[in-house]
Length: 310
Image (cartoon, rainbow, N blue to C red; front, top):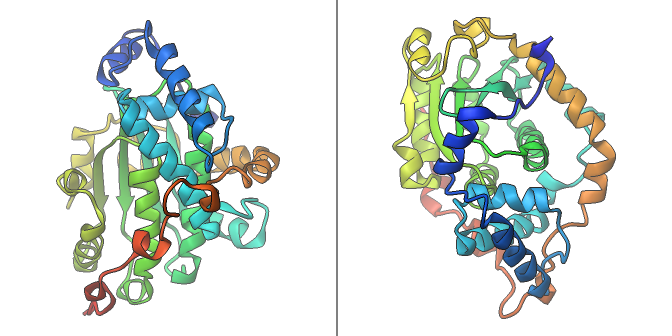
């Protein structure tokens, strides 16, 4: 049954179309890959060896700009050292992660849109999710991100996120940690090769508009302009085909429960791999010049601290 598949890869005409969009030339991409591997070997503070597949995912996410790819990779390894709360103890059988399965969902749907984009639907299932669990929610999201680095063998034409805001309440906002959100958004925007094309918010409420305004200062301008608020679930179909959307979102695709169960199983299969990966991170003591100043990197403007929430 196709529903249990986790990352269906593009092929045929769609594959060709994505190559153009990613600026990927099959004749020169191996040369680009070799250039990045050579650069990595010369960076004393970064891992010497990394697998070709993941480097290729970074090259694609950077439209084969070698300079941008180097910056992203450096940031990726830097964040792995800077945010142990996201990048260590990544075992989905640990109680604090296992319990989240009943509280939140946020796995990518198996197929691709006609333009070759991957769609992820995120929703809370439990009104009582605590802001203290936010770091673990972010940890799970980045675990999926790391599996995608490995398993997106062909690259995709970008990502679409659908955020279902139905369980978000003012009490959640009051507890949100600006520093956790900022760290996570730096990871997503600066350290992962994600081409974020659209963010759709459904089941919105006034509290969500407050939340979006809260997060906007941490977002890149081009992403701010890609946030769409839907007052009616039906308008999602203008962006994502009906056959991809789960029934609970007005489509005919497989249920979100199936998608998330398949992903939790996948993360479980990767448990040993996650453990081995913990050592793969930047070593600031060996960085040429000045080590990264984490306070500067994550510095949060005082004005966010005094955010008043109605």
